[in-house]
Amino acid sequence: MPPLFININPTSWILLFLSILLVGWEAQATNIPPKYQQIAYQYQIPGVILYAVALAESGMVLKSGKFRAWPWTLNVAGKPKRYSTRKEAWKAIQYYMAQGVRSIDIGLLQVNWLWNGDKLGNTWSALDPVFNAKTGAKLLHEAFVIKGNWPEAVGHYHSPGKKWKQQYRAKKYSKRVMKHYKRITKGQ
Image 1: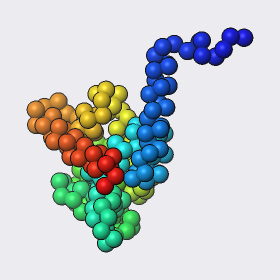
Image 2: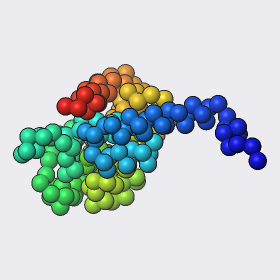
Image 3: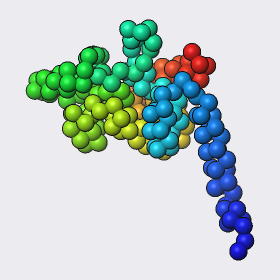
């Protein structure tokens, strides 16, 4: 039987090499919480990208003085709101929905209920930090498949439309996420 590597085409070798580099680089990214790295790996996205998006979407300064993504974050019709517990955030979602509001960004990755409620299942599961991060990671992966590079994919995650104003918001958002990306990779 011939050696296994003979049957692998050049494209597969390149992808394997890049994957090894990515895994090695990610392993050095100690500023990324392990759960983000696990989820990112599962959805084939860089952990630093997933964590940078979470910081841009739900980041806040904790009492400890550290800047972290906060799972009980909502954005209701463009206004950010933070809650102390999952139950408080869930009750707030129920309140806003009873008022007819459907455009609510939920959780760590601020997955929008109006556009992605089918992926979130129900409002309680939407607030589960791991489930929310996985849903956001899936959306980021889908954006990468469309755009082919991470800065544009991140912008598409936030504002996928084709109109000039939507594209402007996408670029502005991408720059915001990339600032977090740079901070994370510099170890600050």
